[in-house]
Image (cartoon, rainbow, N blue to C red; front, side):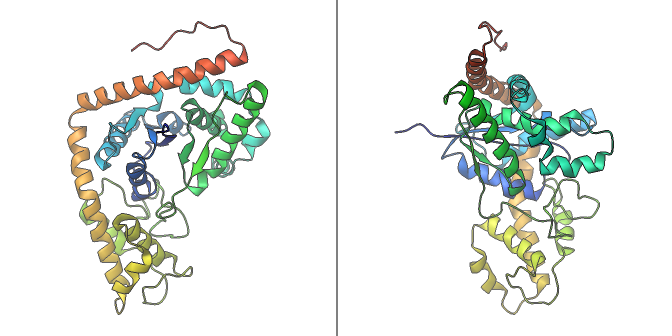
Length: 338
C-alpha cells in the first residue's frame, strides 16, 4: 500500500470563525483526513500582519483549535498544532525570502487590496506573508493544499519558489504542491452582499454567521439575508442570495441543489430562510457544545497542542535540515527542545 500524500491547511484565528470557514474549510478537512496524512494548524503568525489585541488573539487561537477538534478532526488521523509553536516556519520563511522576488510579491492581489487600506504605513509582514505561507506548505512536503479560489495565487507563488529552488539545488529539495479546491461549499457568500465572500469582519452588517452565534442570532441573520427580486426559489446567477442559501443547505446536508429545489415548489423566500437557519443551527449545536467543553479544559488542549507541535517539528526539522544542507550551511543546528 502506497504512503498517503500529505495535506496541509490552516485558518487565521483573527475575530471569530464563520460559517464560511466551517463549510469551506473545516467540514472538508473532516472528510479529507481519512484520505491524506493531514496537518491542520492555527495560523497565528499570519494574523499579526494586522495589529491584534494580545488577549483576544490568544482566546481566538484557543477557540480555533477547540473548534477543529469539536467539528470532527480526529487526532488518530490528523496532526493539530499552532504555527508559532514550531519555529521552523519562521526559519524557512527567511530562506525562501532569499529566493523570492519583489515583483512577484507586489503582484499579489490580496496585498494590493489590503495595502490600499494601509496608506503609507504598509507593514513588511503584509507584503511578505505569502512567503511565510509558502514556508508553511513546503516545510511539510504537502502535495495537496485545500484553499479558496482567492488563495490560488499564493499557491502558484509557492509552486514557483519550489520549482526555482529545485532547479538550483535538485528536484528532491521541495515537493511541489497542488491547490485542492472543493467543488461544493468552497465559497460561502456574505448574507447581506452575496456577491462577496463571507468574511470574519462583517459583524456590523450582519453578513456573517459566526460559529459561536446563538440559535437566535443565527435565525435573525439568515432571516434578514438578501434574497433578490421575485419570490420563486430557483437556482440562477441573477439570484445570488438564493443561490447562497441553497449552497449552504447543500454543503451541510450533502444533498445536491437539484435535489433540494423541488422541496420549495410553491414556497417563498421566507421558507428558504427559516429552513436554512434551522439546518445551520442543528449542524452547529453539537460543535458549539463540544467546543465549550474543550475550552473548559485548557490543560488538556495545551497537552494536545504540545504533542501536535512535537510531531510537526519532527517533520519540519527533516525538511529544514535538508534545505540547509543543500544551500551550504554547516550541519549541527540545535534541535528544538521537547
